Image 1 (spheres, rainbow, N blue to C red):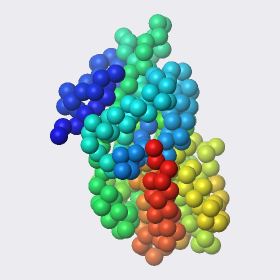
Image 2 (cartoon, rainbow, N blue to C red):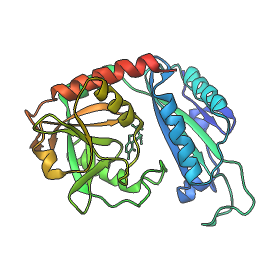
Image 3 (cartoon, rainbow, N blue to C red):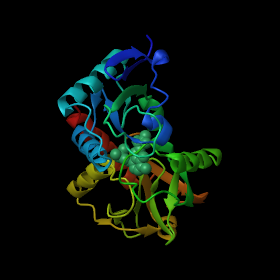
Image 4 (cartoon, rainbow, N blue to C red):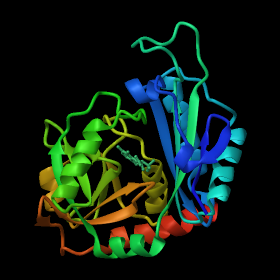
Length: 287
Ligand code: PDD
């Protein structure tokens, strides 16, 4: 059974799916995206991702290409046609197709919409989480609007590639003050030596992770002490635990940063428990 993509109103064979060469997403990264994790064929954290999608589009003055209800139908139908139960749903919306010009097209064009679905092996993901991953740090070199989920991801791409080349699972950006901002495709967390759960506040230049927001609720319901604030690389290195969150990673324990062991050098109890509570809750609330 071949893969299917949704492209501008049609379900097409993935191998044949194409966008126009003057799509502004392709030429100028004038596009935003969302990623939903999918459990048993359903979308996890739907509300958070739709709300952020609308916000990202609003910040760039791109219209919602269709109603939330219609978009939900498209996402689900793409999932159904791919016969995938566990994986990731990717939505990209660009400003549309127009002759290349940095400024917006004088005559508005319809946004271009693409949806793809990727299978994830839940067994392999659990094995990875059980082992934990390493993180490589890299200087923060991104623009000032990381709160918008744009496809302009080149610094993230280079950081992730450097991490992979070093045998690490994620890259963490560290700003000029020596504080961790976030991961190349995830939000960063630590559990301090005295048991406080810390993640960067969203007034910083980071993406407001949907998994992050849901996990904060989970942690609150577990009566875990939480601080949303900057934490330094130094503090992370002396933390009891570290982990990162995102639609792809869910909750991923970090066992080393720049080759230095974190805590016991094995996934910590807080991260491990939060991962299973997150997955359980997200599954129950998926649509
Ligand atoms: N990335 N920070 C960055 C830079 C991200 O790209 C992501 C998600 C997150 C976590 O956000 P959320 O919990 O809403 O997924 C934080 C997605 C998964 C991606 O680019 O594939």
